[in-house]
Length: 108
Image (cartoon, rainbow, N blue to C red; front, top):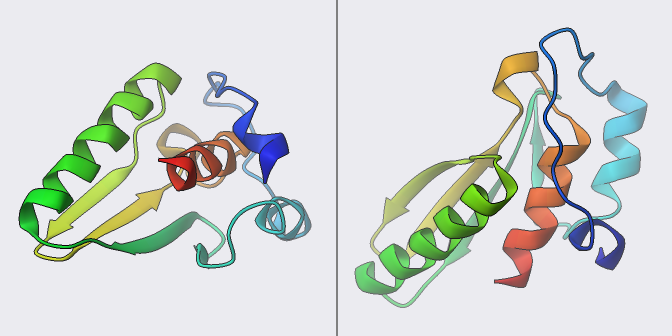
């Protein structure tokens, strides 16, 4: 996982091809096993936190990181948890950026 957290997200062009199933498996091995691949188009993880205020604080930390990387996940803020879903929207699937961001979120 340390390999990915040292990298930075780079912009994808609309004509960039999303990762295929084999490439997704390769990158999936490099992140925490709690991340789940959904339809080979996104990755998702739920983080448990103490309460709503902790959820908001964690979401804010993710937001700062996402702005730094210029790669923005979908967040669901709940009392006691944060749902994070990452994909590369403009290519309609997964890119290496998604796995880089996941590795960095796990470091928060």
